[in-house]
Length: 140
Image (cartoon, rainbow, N blue to C red; front, side, top):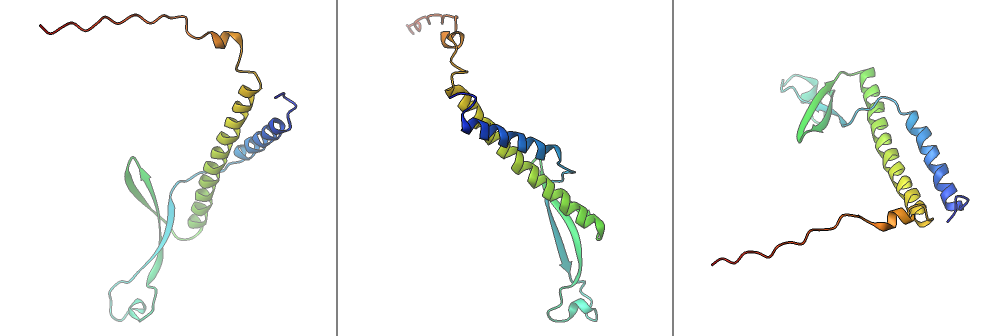
């Protein structure tokens, strides 16, 4: 394969496109955002009526840190929308980096097949010689 191979040119274009998208990544926040409704338990409250959702939602962000689940309360209002955008950006970042790794791996494989990785110097191998191992001593 040569540098003018259409497949390599397509992969390089895809790589450049991914790099541009990665440069535009915003704030990142891993985790899941969940809105919860709860019932207070007071018999006269609106939440005690049959079919009522309850009070809320109260928003919490949950994620794993070193094997433990961490929950953070997110205040209602604009903070919820901002947090949702940050979670979406984090997912987008992960998707883009995974795709970038796959494209890069394909480019590296194409370069190896094209002769870049087959120089005489690389074919020589190690110049070290392994030492012969001595025979185990008998247990007399």
